[in-house]
Length: 241
Image (cartoon, rainbow, N blue to C red; front, side, top):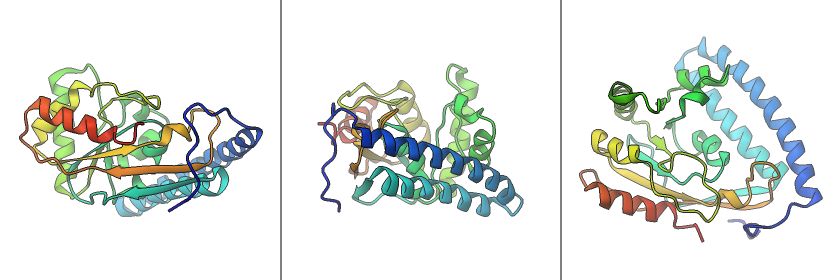
């Protein structure tokens, strides 16, 4: 547990924040290029080697966030390591990049645009991801559900951001309609996770402090749409104060 308090929501960036962020960007993006190349090499040795490399990339990011940016992370509760739907608050890229370091081989739901990024997109697909094709109709939804069921059957957590995109700190938008559809079609338990990364891990200048992940109560399948959405919405916003 870190005693350093998180930054206030609207705290101004200091020269130190700017300097640390610039060093972080240079180190992280250079390291990412190296890790993408390593993924190509690891893929020749099999899927397990590739997944270890992806996990190494995520842990590299966490190490840099800790020792360059001064950002610590604490997890309240137990994140699942089984084939369930993990619904996570999305305030910054931190929680997306940190996923492989948090859980054992989670299968994320990246947007199709992200999956088309050269190098990174190939690695994400090969690692195992449920690519979200928005606006593509029932055929695309069936393909997503089939893919997700396959990963869940392997015991891999399905990590989704039910708000659909990054949300500024303090905002509580409704969940995207597709979340309830996935919950119904997959018939899997949901584990909601609150995150308060947005106060520190800004789009530009990042700040030192503590990021907390709070794991909510497990929600079993079969609930009416209104009830599951209300319970997940409340749980993922538990740190949104």
